[in-house]
Structure formats: C-alpha cells, structure tokens
Image 1 (tube, rainbow, N blue to C red):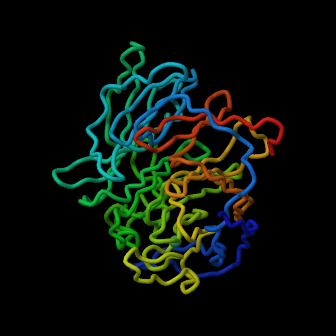
Image 2 (spheres, protein in one colour):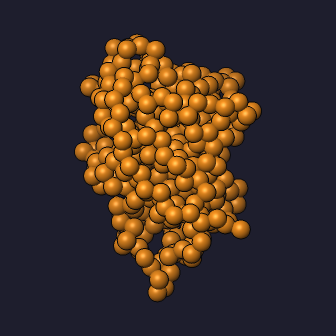
Length: 395
Ligand SMILES: [Ca+2]
C-alpha cells in the first residue's frame, strides 16, 4: 500500500530579492533555495531501527522537558502541567495559569531556563482567554519543588503575548527554543488562521520572534521601528509553526503546517519572508489555488515540503545515545501523518532520509539527561514512549 520514493536531495539556488512586505524592509539577500519536488509521498518501507515502549498514559500531552535529576515536566493540551518520574504516576503542578482549551489551543511548550540550575525558572506557553477571544502567551515562573508531593509554580509572570485577539482556536504555534549562546528566546507565533498578519511586520502573528530572556524584544532585531510589535520579529510570512530548533552548526530550522498540502521545512534567516499567504506549495481547504513559491523568487522557498500534508508537529535535533547514526540529524513528528521522519541537515541543505509510519499521532520528542529519547503520543489516551534501538540492525 505504500509507495516508496528515493530521498530527494535539495540544492540551494542563489536568488536575490527584496522581502515582499508592504513596507520597504531590509533584506539580507542571502541565498534562497528554489522550490523543490515534494517529499510528501516518500514513506520508508523497511522496518524502523527502533522500537517504542509506552511508560505512562496521559491525556493529550503536548511538550516535555527533563530536569537534571531525571524528572520531567509535561504539558497537556487540556491545561495541565505534570511532574513525572519514570516508574511513578504523574503529579499535577499547582499554580499554573488559566488556559483556554479548545481545538488546537491549550497548554503548549515547556522549557527550563538556561540558568535553571540556580534559578529554578521555567518558560511555558499557553492559550490565554480574554472574554470570548484568545491569544498565545509566554510566561516565566519559578518551579518550587520544596514539597515533592506538591510541586508549585511561583512568581508566574506573563512576559509576552500575541498582538491580536481572535476567536477561532487555530494556529497558535507557540514553540520556544533558546539560541546556542543561551541569550535569546526564539518563539514561534502562528497567524491564527487569519493569513494577512503574517505579512505585516507590525504584527507578531505568523512570525519567528527573537526575545531577551525576560521577554523584551532583542535590541538588534531587524524590524525595530516599523511600529507595533515589529521589534520582536526575526522572520515573517509563516503560517502554523510547530517546530523550531538550532542544528549543531548554529543554523535555525523551522517546520510549519501548510494549508491543504504544502507543509514546510524552512531554514530561518534574519529578516526573511517565507511567503505565507502569498505563496504556498499547497492550496486552500476550499480548493482555491494559491500561487506556488516558484512564482515569487523574492520570497523564501522551503528546503523541503510535503504534498500531501503530513501535519508536522515538532522538530528535534537528535543528540542522544540510542542510535549513533542519528546524531545531529533532525527528527520531525507527524500528527495526521502518524510518523517519525529523519532529516539530514547539512549546511543549508536538507534531505528526508526516512519516514516510519506509527499508529498514533506524534506530538514531539524530548531527551533525558542519560541521552534517551522519548516520544509524545498526542491522543486522549496518549502518553510518553521510550525509544529503544532494535536489536541487531540499528543504523
Ligand atoms: Ca512558505
């Protein structure tokens, strides 16, 4: 039933052009790739080099961050923050903010602060209610573990919010990662299915944002002074950005859901415009076509794209121990596509190496201090799985 294609090598083709924004905006004029052939139909037919062992059942887990002592913090889309040690039942963390849980909205990402060892600070994203409307928010809080039976968030402070409130519960994105020097937060902010904000650099929707660790904009961001929340913006023209990670060479990669077809893996560069909603490799859900990236060489095309869609949920750079050949490569989880994908990231090029089909929605990945990889199963009866190498044929 599966059709197997050869992995598609991606070649960067130099193009130069001004970013296509309503205002004249700076452009770094860096190399941009031409749109490539889709990798959406490539599915690996050989057995995966791993097996998965479910260690705990959780309702709709979303993100997971391990602490140095081996315990993990786990968010759930319905709005919980859990503290979990393998072999024990998860414990509710108290003091979490009120979360609006509807469709794609709820509790989102969780990350330890770079100085967690001394500050006990954590960052979490979630959907904040405001009357009948909602927006994504980023909060910082101190995790108090004095009473191991009652973990508590203290001094919770909302340090960032989306510029606009909207009603429909889609495209919050709200993934975070830290720069390799640990000085900046890179935060994805989805366009709330409103399309046009993605091309407005005064709005912080449909963007990759670069913030200081206290939530203020980085002082040397490219659009500072264009009004509104432009000071936060690092790149624009994005749709629903559910994965962001720095590769070992310091390059920043991002993965986003396209419309009907056209999920993208993008190499993120300062001030670049990634095209949404002007261009896409997919079309609107009502069938109305969207011009392709090839028609607008001034807009950044994806390094890889998927037609049909796989609904990518996450991007993780593997640094674990179980499968040595994966080190430095990217792992992408798929929700609708129910898969784990392995991607070679080499300079500005990306190549899909494998796509292994599972029988559940993959929300994301986390590595523990021992270098073990865990997968997050996004289902009402989902949970956390440990990845173990298959005996004999690990590659
Ligand atoms: Ca795009």
